[in-house]
Image (tube, rainbow, N blue to C red):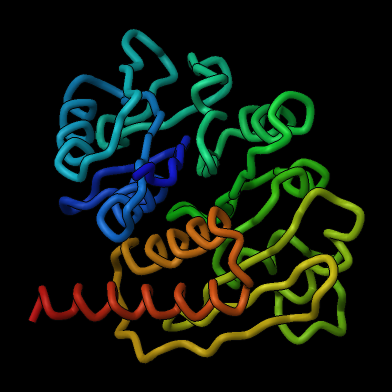
Length: 264
């Protein structure tokens, strides 16, 4: 039986034995669902390549990793891997997947990848992550961000993104995005809030809120990465957003509780 195929292209850092950002999403998808996951990035040095490739290999993730050798602008040694415009990509292979998750901070690359499906791969959907440990992506224009199909981030991220253009009468940051996605390619804007609360707006439907399960606080990226994984799988299976939200909050709580149990 063919499993859904998801490609993740983005940035990750190895911290305390766990991968952050794009790497965390890859791990949660591979361990939590029957899905084939591929990950493309460029490691900052050979040691980072070995560490990240080992973790991904153990999780059954297909890696397209290279090393940024001799690059004077390479990240510091503790930055495991990143991807930016100019790095080699197999575009046909990337967009042969059922879903592409863009979790890179590089603005030029993000715009390039968002433009491609419209002209060349119209059947592919793209999920764009806007939440990173270092904060929301700075300088991304709304015209570029709204080229993606679904945008996912933390509730606070959308306060920064919407800014003064937001609907000032909205009850929350995600609802404030509604006027900004009208007439764009965006199908939905999704956020996670405290304890994994789910909020979602689309171009045609009002704010949907799914309250969270009780989930203890965790400093790990795993709970919200599992939340994003549920959104990604919902996109592939064309589920309704209420069903997606319930699964996302459930997955968030399960991972948060598991992490708490590990540290008791």
